[in-house]
Length: 264
Length: 281
Image 1 (cartoon, rainbow over the protein chains, first blue to last red):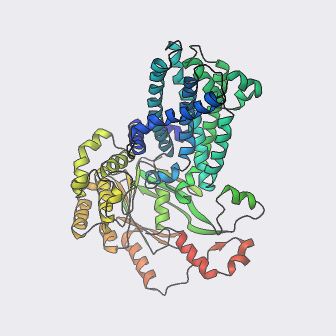
Image 2: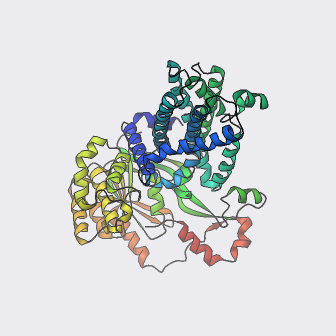
Image 3: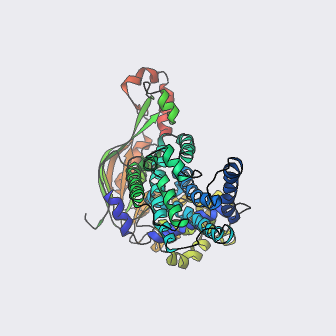
């Protein structure tokens, strides 16, 4: 563990390399297909349309400004899914990077999550456009919006930790991807993504604290939509969760991940 | 650690555990909790210790399946060791018919990624980029994905990256077998020029001329054991004597006692597995 951190800090071209790998990864994902970057913009819009029809039109949800309410939660959720479910096979697809040299595997994860962060950045820009120009009933932008940065950082650490755990388990149990797919759909419906916050916390008291991602979603709405500071108790709780997952993930990487070259 | 030492290996060994029936899914593991998978152990490397100094060119010889490739992977830090420890002082590069390249990326991207992994800065890669491409004779295919390349082209690119970017410690696995005659001549030429100056090289080859020409010290391996490490001529002699002797029966793989009866039925198959288990040049 200490060696890992020392190696990380001392080597000088690391940040450059992370950025290079992230750019290439992003390009591979979006510029290879016909829709290109357009798809990155289209996907959240389509998701929102589906849930809007289901919950607003059919179920007559009474949440005001439901589209923005969904938008901010969904782009955060999509980042989480892309960075966890999307990276389960990372040690397999990125084998060429570590099979011929003693490169630190953690870089592979961080660069892939950076690539996802670029996608998230485009999504948040779209959100700001939508929220300021389309659904304009809100109070508009404020300094509280900047809280989204630490909240995103929290999500990044959480995703990195879970990604490390899942992808190293993949070395010994290939069907972890199916298990995780079921688990995430479970988590999706147990997170306050399209429920009203009071309904959610009344139905499942305390669950806000048991679910490591729900606090991030709730706080993101506080700072982006309601122009209020985040719920600090939730924030600390979620940060603790994220760091815990990261620590377990790093242990898994050192124990299981070291065997990736010979087992995969 | 002594600064003049590139690699220090102390009491290292490696045993591969090969599962006969694959229990690599969650479902399989759950349904077979009381029925653990039958495993077979292959001792690829037996306890050994040695040091390689900085700037040395060391040969590594032995017959197929003796553990040469496994040893290079351990020393390069790609595989973890089972016992002991390896201290590696610098970046490593395993050159084995091409460095690690992604077939989904173009030649240009692969050059940047590989050179960056080897520890170079982007602006330094910019400087040598044209040199890498022209050495590999791939000027017309810079922005082509390498999945469309012929295997010779991929190998040439890999070799060219290794030559121009380099690493502190390089493991060269039959590198003179890359490309056509003309490219091979070029490869030998660059090898004899200043490329490996100041770098630590561990060379694996079945061509004794190459080993005796370039290596000051050599290691001779047999059945996963380091039989000799020292003077190159002596190592080659031992290897030659072994080659001309009657071919001994391959060593029986170490089979765990409780599965002995079950595995015994296919002793011949087990031997074949043992050989296949160990990646070889």
